[in-house]
Length: 137
Image (cartoon, rainbow, N blue to C red; front, side):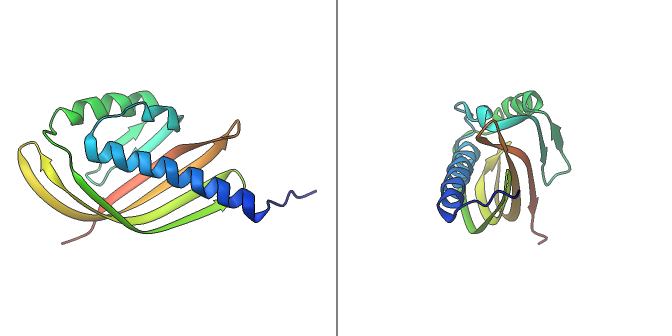
């Protein structure tokens, strides 16, 4: 027998996914994890626009620590055109963003697109995958 979710449940799930997404945005502004890794699945995979592939929560933490050494100040991140889709224990969020800051001593101002995939594990929403790409100039 199929289980039908009520609209209120979907809105609770949507609010939680957007909350985690905002925490993700915050670590991308400040380059401080602040415990965010608890919202990643152990087998988390991240595709970064420069061709980098990060496989696993532990590898993400290591990569984040390495990259954050090249960041001297908080970045500015604006996210827009967010669209959340929830299907049972899976969800995805697509959006566009503008990112400005200084990396490795060089200023940048980039516009891009992002996708985040979430899965519900033991009743908790966790980010299982993310993919970011910069728009072609």
